[in-house]
Image 1 (cartoon, rainbow, N blue to C red):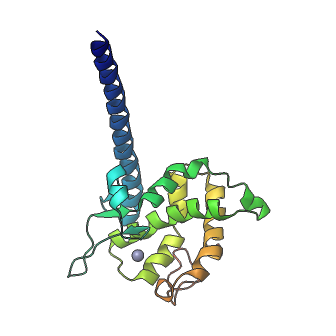
Image 2: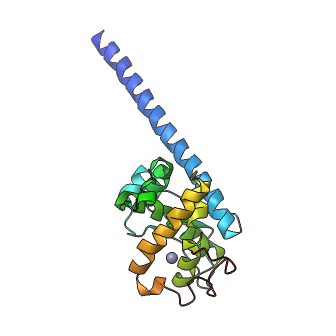
Image 3: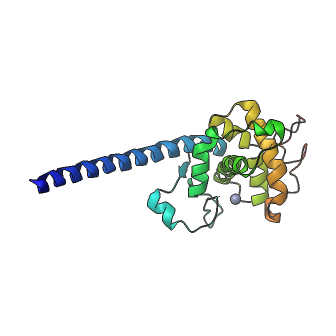
Length: 198
Ligand SMILES: [Zn+2]
């Protein structure tokens, strides 16, 4: 009798866990679809975004925020792989309080969340066909606001975030992420007719 009860309880627990696992998987698929739509808009073609699952996250060793593979002919694959950290930051971006931008008191938590939006833009420009890190990065830093808006941030806030990330992040990047034409009104300025930068 006790064994039967125990078994029933065990089955209930297993069913509940199975339910959670299923929901998590479904959420991940939904999340990837949402990110893929944003990346596709930037890439100008239909591309995929992959966030590692729980076990994928455990074995992730690339050490990069995101990556796009190119073939020998210089053509990008049709998807990007994002790190577990980047995916987690993108997931919570709209829950981060960016009102500190008004006071100039934002810190690492805001930077990490905003930088993840930049990472998605960066990988999307690789998917568009840009292989050069400097050019890709310059375009990405001008489209971080676009990604943040697509994820739910109001436009003005997203624009502020983009300028702040450029000011804080760009100077600290390695030399191959810097392009000579990446300045206001320069050859890589995507809207050279406006004074706003990036
Ligand atoms: Zn890159």
